[in-house]
Image (cartoon, rainbow, N blue to C red):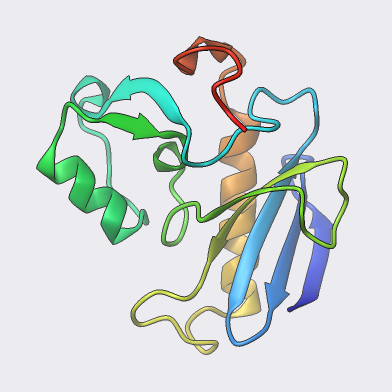
Length: 150
């Protein structure tokens, strides 16, 4: 997989789009961000039933199914972000700035092709994700217990 584009988003976070057989988008947060070091599958102190009229948006079908089956289910961190197919990656193992913690999505879902998931589309999704990450509350009590993440 090669990096097709790297830039600083309008929200001031680093972003990248990688391409192999499909594209993936990534946004990095610094060590000062409340989600630095957290895994996208970490459980948060929120249930769907507490979120009210929460839009499904662009989340992945598995997330949507699990929520539909059990509205009292504790949510994963990744569900809080509205990005193409949902968050499918977190970590610093990318060939990018290892001082950042990266969150990413992929364009490898049903109906995704390089023609539908263009570079411009992926840049837009990264900008949207960066805006959501930049606006994330700094209150770490959203996690069940400090250190529950990886």
